[in-house]
Amino acid sequence: MKDNIILLDTSLRDGGHLNDSRFGKDMILDTVLGLCKAGLDYIELGFLTTDDYDENVSLFRNVADARKVIPENSYDTRFALMAYRFDVNNIEDYDGGNVDLIRTTFHVYDFEEGIENCKKTINKGYKCSVNLINFYGAYTEEQKIENFKRINDLHPFAISMADTYGLLDMPEIEYIYELADKYLDKDITLGIHLHENKGISYAMAQRFLQLKSPERKALVDGTLYGIGEVPGNLRLEQICEFMNKYHGTDYKMDEIYSLIDKYYIKEKAKKDWDYELPYAISSKYGINRKYAQFLIEKGDVGMYDINKILSNVHGADKPSYNKVLAAKIYEDYKNNN
Image (tube, rainbow, N blue to C red; front, side, top):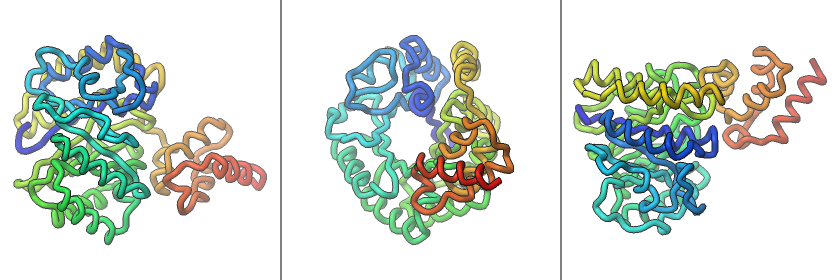
């Protein structure tokens, strides 16, 4: 970490959406080792789960399972796990080791349950990151401010704002940073998790870091080669190069590029992820990416049609994918055009 900026890799967690986290033992171990050698500040190893541990899958029942993928020499890298619909009471108390961060993530509709899980995380001795899904789109300004006050009372290590549906442009990222910086206690780290719906996540990450106040730490998520559900995530290699160039860090890019060559180009060939226009259109309407995916898979609608069809998703159906509605608005459009 330099200039109070923390880079966190989430390739094995977020990338797991593509393959049910079944990367294979070698890819998991080599990814963690390579990122440690590269000098990453944090590696998010995967989701916490109640399933039995499988060495070929980046899912973990507890911290003891997670330690099985951490090399004996992890250099100065620290490690995180993600709790989503997982009761943190099911893991052991923090023991002073390098798995010290639990990222608890939740939607607007289960906010109270999520805050309770954050309290459990802190009571167990871990650093807690409050990861708010669709932060910009799901909450009114009044709710955002109230949430910041609630989070001040909780006083976690960090709050990370996920741009779940790719809604953010430059004015929005400036708005949410300035609002958070105004209402959040200064010793709470402010993080961002960006998706590539509009093909601008690298520019957005740079702007986020330009906005950073000197007295507050920033946390930026990225993934190797942008791995994640289409349209993918901020590319870790880009933000590492940026940090090396403008903030004097020394992330070892040879290690990162070697991992991309060995594993991540091949993963992308199996199941592609990257900017695609239908996902930019879905982000314009602030709706779940799966509506765009549904129309792409139909194979008989163009961009003009997709724009028209997606404009018919409203209200509670926008963030939560409604496959019945998706089929209906598609059929209605086809029958009338």
